[in-house]
Image 1 (cartoon, rainbow, N blue to C red):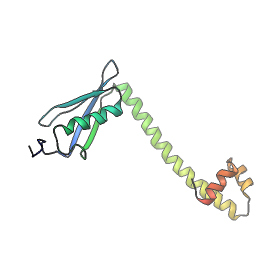
Image 2 (spheres, rainbow, N blue to C red; image 1 turned 30 degrees about the vertical axis):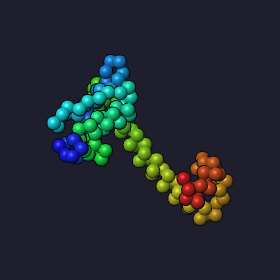
Image 3 (tube, rainbow, N blue to C red; image 1 turned 60 degrees about the horizontal axis):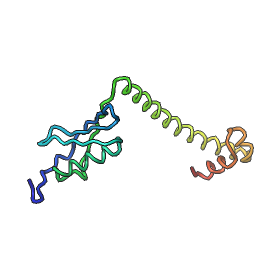
Image 4 (cartoon, helix red, strand yellow; image 1 turned 90 degrees about the vertical axis):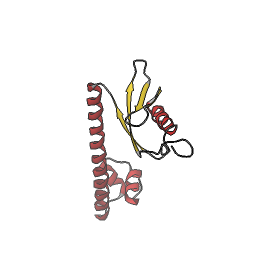
Length: 137
């Protein structure tokens, strides 16, 4: 232990989360000198609590990487994985659509077309076309 009583940190910890029947999250870190555990009603708070619990034993808890391993029933894991994949695809398509709209607005403006007609063709508001043309979000 160092001068303040804390053990030298490991730099990275794996936190395992599981949900109790009453809805509380139990979280623990194993594989170190101490088994560290805590609980909370929300996942966000459980994440905060485990870092606080680590700080009681290790000197790097504030800066350490904590890898979350959330234990869920197989059906819930599959539902979550499917949702995450769709969100990733949605984000990718949204970026492509925004880039395509910018190119289309520029091309239509270059052809001499006005904002009102561009908005009508792209099924956007005139304000949105103006934003795109100015390069604002």
